Image 1 (cartoon, one colour):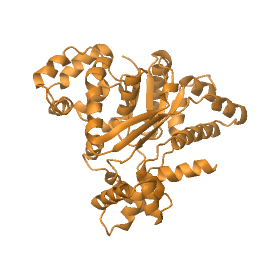
Image 2: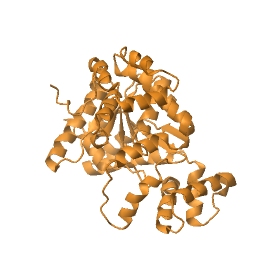
Image 3: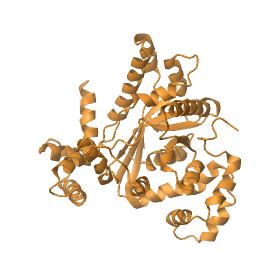
Image 4: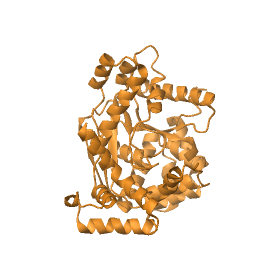
Length: 377
């Protein structure tokens, strides 16, 4: 028994048996029919028997699925910054969070195709309650973030996860992906939660906070979708917050959101890898003594990198102009792009729902607004 058993992904020797346990699940059949539409079921069932590692599964099946998603629901994926990273070095990728499944799936496709170390990725255990999703997640090197715990159990769980991430990065030489916050940024505001950094720091031991964070080799990742395929699905929670009401998720809401994110239209997508946070940590160590203020400063560095390197698609400028009843950024988009966006808005938000319309536009405009604020500092 390992102290990480409750949260860890599968070891390679477990992969074949675990894959076999869900091979005939109807959801697996649907996934494989999507990935290989012209292939008979018996063909991929036989191929499953040859899979002996997570790497095998990702190379021969998952990568093809992600490429199919891009082909059918986007106008392409572009990247920048990854050429500066060493291909043999494990990194801790901390990114903004837009889509439950795709954020980490797209990053791993980029890492696979560029020859970098792929990631182990954090995922909330509330998202993988169904056996098929749980097994599929662990076949993709996902480890579980335990949700809904008491305060005492939450502290214990955070300590375990912190030690697991340390073990993956420093002992197993395995890259790790984690979102900058718990849950997706539904309003388009990308901000690192200090609690995420506190969790990471729990395994520092006798090392100073800044020295430990240097050893993790943190790389901020900026993920930008031209269209958010789950934009309208985020409205109920934003409206509940607006009315200062508690928001309670529907029974299958997370699953519906996952499917919408995968299959919904995204148009263009861009991933940017920032610089490894290193010299900045020396500066913080030299000028900031208080640990909480050090964490605040590190969070600010991550935020600045993510926001300043975020690819601003025409939809962000259109939303800003519509929100402010201006044509300030008219040079950043065409009239056709504007009309397509307005059509999307009209199809998703009732014409007499002014509050939802404002939240919808603000969600798209906030990355631009935040970038402008960052440039002013």
